[in-house]
Image (cartoon, rainbow, N blue to C red; front, side):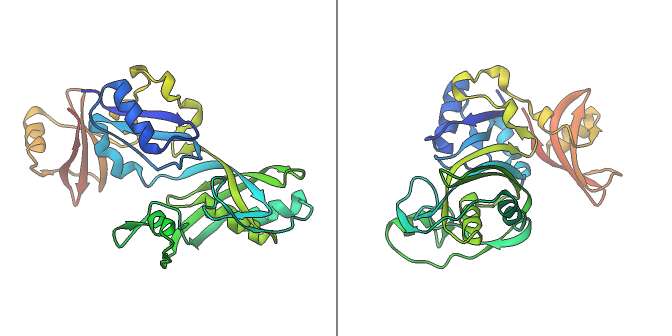
Length: 282
């Protein structure tokens, strides 16, 4: 059975689930799932796990992400992005590079962010965008996020646009960030374009479009997990491990790659010097 990860360069207009469905069909696999949803408007890196690699999602969903975003200034839209209706307009002054760069830098660090009402977050079993489309108001709790770095990339004075690079934690909504940046600049704005350039070690330069996807692009589970230290088990201990028996292992607490006769078996977790089976790859 095929297992591993493929790094897809998602096209604009597709949902993340659209991509998963196409990957399953092309690679002829039954199980697949993406890491980190990208809105239809967004493009760029969308890692898709296939086969037994889907069991690794819990280790990968917390990864940091990097984006290039463009803000359209002078208008605010109900969805926070280019697909929405204009709900507010405002004058846009002269966009001076030093001032814009300082505003961007001011957003670096830990902070609270309220997710947009047009998002798939569930509250009381219902997605936020379902409330929004029904015209229902609901209180949205703020989340802890962190902006690691912000960089001004381009100013287009004629089009009233700025483009920037951002590295951020899981759960950061760039649409909200764009609105907040515009507000701090004394105007309003919306996210006009968004490209994800990295999900942790999965980079855009290694991504392929769905049309160019083949089995050759599958990165093995062993390769994905190469950062974890290695434990070799003999045949008897391996059988115990596979049967769910915890083995005494004088190692530091953490995640380990498990091998038997140089063959990769999967992942185990050591806690209090006991090794427990976690992810097994067939």
